[in-house]
Amino acid sequence: TQNPPRTSKLAGRRQQTMLRAILLIASLGVVHAFHAALPLQPSALRPQLRSSTSFSTLAKMRKTAATGQGLLAPRMSATAETRSPAVEYETDAQGRQRLKYREEGWEKWVWKGTEETPCAPYDVNYIQDGTEGTPIVLVHGFGAHAYHWRYQFPELAKKHRVYSLCLLGYGWSPKADVPYSMDMWGQQVADFLSEVVQEPAVVGGNSIGGVASLRAASLNPGMVKGLVMLNAAGNFEARPLTERQMQQLLEAEQATGPGVWLRSVVQKVLSALIFYQTKTRISPILKQVYENEEQVDSDLVTSIQEPAKDPKALAAFQQISMQQSRLKTTVPEMLDMCKPGLPTLILWGQKDPWMTAARGDGVKRVCDAKGMQCEFVPLEDAGHCPQDDDPDSVNKEMMRWVAEKFE
Figure 1 (cartoon, helix red, strand yellow):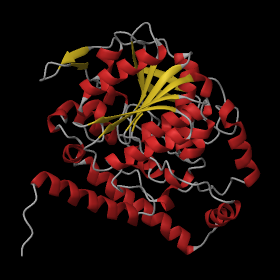
Figure 2: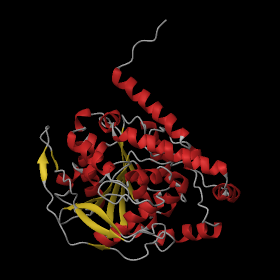
Figure 3: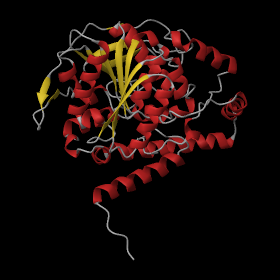
Figure 4: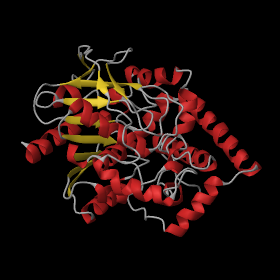
């Protein structure tokens, strides 16, 4: 007997997701080069050591990370420019207010980087609105930028100071050719809290931005009063490696020869193929992970296409695609470093084909086990990017939760 026909949308999603999964597995760890690896493989998420990292150095980094004074601490304090372009709003086709797209970006914060970013300082783009209330800092996901929170600003800024920033390598921020890692992005967010916001804030992140927000909370716990994660990426059930396993990984990182060179070439070639394929298919890819496809409009597509035209974008993408192999701190270790009982809101789009509903349940279990004050809210009408896919629900839940916890 023949199988019954599948709906075109579901079939297209599954076919494209499996294709990207195969490409990413073949590229030896380009896991976040569009999240298409579906359930992230534990082997791809193991904290691997760079050749320059000794065990004593790693131990020192973990011990001092919570104070922000370790290896990932900034080399110098950073400053924020006084330029403040006006934030403008517009009304979409559904009558909802949202941030108006600006081709030139918004404000700049001069970030001095970390010891692992020798090309610093960097002019990091960020958006700010609101004059009072609990500060809220929003962190985007893979391939996105500060503007991806366009629907949150009009609503949240009514009662709060709201910020969103472009992580290094994304959006309007520089496309630096540096060894990207979740530790580096977490430090960037932690520094932004200290130097721009300048008081404890609620930090929220989507996808890899959820893990970057968590990393910031573990590096600078005194500056994060609450955590919001929306369809967060990362392996929340990863186990720390034994010292023997870390030694084996270190030896592998220090290995040289034709095989190592060939693997590097293959990684770069495959990441380049993924980069160029993705750059020309932004709209259909977004529609795979949005439940409400009408939200994928021309402004959103343009806002992702334009940064990819930067001459340095490919080199940055190739570095970003290898960030998993530079992960020095597992997600459970990050949770252990956070402030005890940290209030946490988990918003999870139930129609996400990448970070599935089952993964959201797993994140909740791990956070509960770590003693966090955790609330889980399933969003039935949203996919991987709930803040843009179902903004009304996200705004309602965030406003309610912040009011209950901090006002």
